[in-house]
Image (cartoon, rainbow, N blue to C red):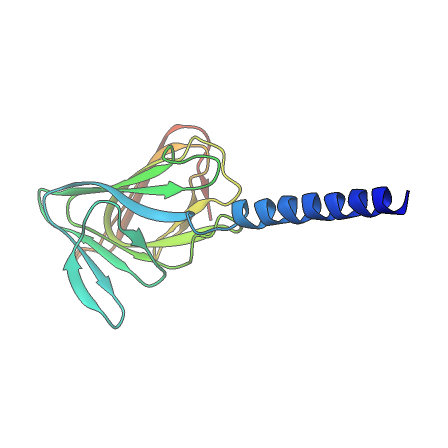
Length: 172
């Protein structure tokens, strides 16, 4: 009788250990983040301490990275998460520069600083943590929208335009 109880306790402990291991492995945030997923033309990524290099598909962006899209080029940045692998993305138009201001870990909202140019956001899929677009003029929360945000500097002053095609774009 004692050996039967002992076997049940050992089996239950092993099952708990397996379940705990699966939870730890699947709850990691290694796959979360902003990735370059579609390039046309020339796009550079400048990383602090590492200099500048030509962007390539599949590169994961980190906090502090500066992405510069040249004339006649575009770059798509996808926010990969556990729930939505590739449904939320931002298209950087020609002559656009952004700075990744936060780590995108899937747990809290992150910011991308639009230094110049235009971005088209398609963030209709549900996320726990959203992408916010920040310019010197405003902060945009394009969650569950298809929207366009443009920030250009000129001799006459800075111009910030935004359009929302679907959903409700929150502006601060």
